[in-house]
Every structure is written in C-alpha cells, then in structure tokens.
Amino acid sequence: MAEFEAERGMPADADTVFAVVSDLDRLPEWMPGPVDVQPTGEGEVHADVEKRGVDSEGTVQVRPEQLRVEWGHAPDYAGWLQVEHAAPGRSSVVLHLSFLGHQPETHGGKAAGEVRQWLDDGLTRLERLVAEG
Image (cartoon, rainbow, N blue to C red; front, side, top):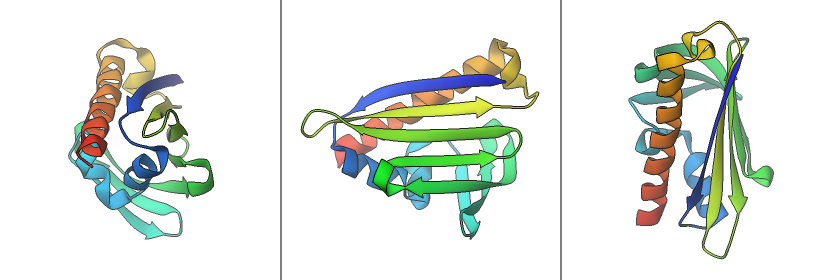
C-alpha cells in the first residue's frame, strides 16, 4: 500500500473551490489529462485517465456538507479531496490518493514520483482555474 498527499492554498473561498472540484464535467479543466469521468449510475462512474493508464469502473461520492469528494476503484485504489475554509476569500485543498494493491506506485521509484508530480500539477491547475474565477 502507498499513500500520497498534497495540500495547496487557494485564492478563492471554499464554496467556490468546492463548486469546481465537485463538478465531474469540470475535471478535465484542472486534472492533468486527458481525464474522462462519466456517471454510469448512482454514485458509479467510468473513469479513463489516459496518462495514469486507468480505464475502469469506480465510485464517486460528493459530500457537499463536508466539502469533500471521495472516489475509488475497489480493491486497488481510493482517493479523496477535502476543501477547507481559510481566511476570507481563501481556502485550502488536500488531495489524497491510496494505492492499495500491487501497482507500480506502491513500490516507490519513478511511478511514485509521477504520482507526486500529478498531484502537484493538478493542484497548480486548480489554483489557476479558481484564481481566474
């Protein structure tokens, strides 16, 4: 198992940031791509993340009362994104990924470095997107 996490301050309030990250149609705007997530049922999605080699069925739960989005593909992968309130007009985002199986990311090295870079790139893109408002 391997855990990866990154945090970034955002130049917008928490509700504004959450509106972006919880809208699955907007994922390609901020996630390093190409990314395609299509709902297939209540809380179920088909995810195609070409750069990460993912093409599978999974789950997504949007929790507006917690400003949190959770997703996963059992039993190999899970993640969550938490938006937190900060100073007026500011917020922060924590993005967490868990690789639970025997994927290359669980063994460190280049694959783990790519995940860290992917997290950083995604948060950088999200920061720019919400700054443009």
